[in-house]
Length: 333
Image (tube, rainbow, N blue to C red; front, top):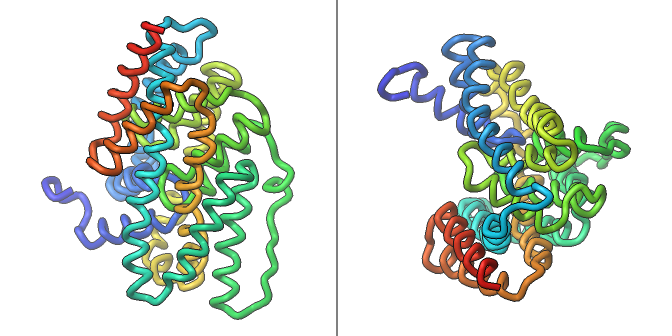
C-alpha cells in the first residue's frame, strides 16, 4: 500500500480496525476491502478469490492425501506427529491474542470481567463444543445489555438453533467466529467429531495442522472437513459458505466502516464476545490433547509446547518438525 499508494494510510488503518471488529477472517476481509477500494465490487470479488483460491487448492490436495483410506505409512505418521502439536499451537494462539486485551483491560479497569469471560469461553470450548457459538453470542448480548441497561432478550434465528449439517458448520466458522482464526477449532470439532462423526479425532487434528501450514487464513480448515464429508465438491461448498460472509460484510458495509468504529453498541457486543472467544481458543487445547491416541504423541506435544511457549519458535516450523518426528517414529514402530 505504501509503494503503490492505492489507499490513504488513515483509511487503511481504519479498515484494519474495522475488520478486527467483524467476525470472520480479518486478513481475507482486509484483502477484499483493498480490492474493493481499488476496482469496486468486481475488483473485490477478484481480489478476494485471488487471496483464497491458491491456499484452498493446496489444502484440498493435501486433504486427499492425508484423509485417504490407506495413506502411506510415513504420511500417516507425519499426520499423527503434526496433529500431536496442535494443542500447543492453540495455547500459543490464545496467549498471543489475550496479551493485548489484558493490557487494554488494565487501562480500562475491566480485568475481572475479562477473566470471567475468558473462563466462560474456555470452559465452553472444553465441554460443549457444538454449542460454543451460542455461548459467544450470549456473552456479546449480555455485554450489550449491560451497556444499554436494558433487559436481555436473546433472539436467535431458528436456523441458528435448529440448523445442522456441513453448511451450518461452515456458516458458523465464517460468520460467527470472534477473536482470531483459531476460535473456529472448537466450533468445527464439536460438529465434525462429536455431533456428526464426519471425522475421527486423528483426522481432525490433521485438518487443523494442514490449516496452519498452508498459505491463507485458518478458516480454510473447513475445506478439509468438507472433503471428509463428501470429497472435493463438499470441500468447495464448505469454503464457499464459510467465506461468503466476509465478501458480504465488505461489499455491503465497507462504506460504513467509520460508523462501525464509532458505534458503541457494536463495541459493547464485541467486548463481551471477543474475550470469550479468546478463552475458547485456550479451552480447545483440552479436547485436542485428549484426542491423542499414542504415548509418543504426548512426547511430541510436550516438545512442541516448549518450542512454542518457552522458546517462541514459529508455528509452521514446529508443526513441520513434529510431522517429521511423527513420520520417523511411526516408521520405526
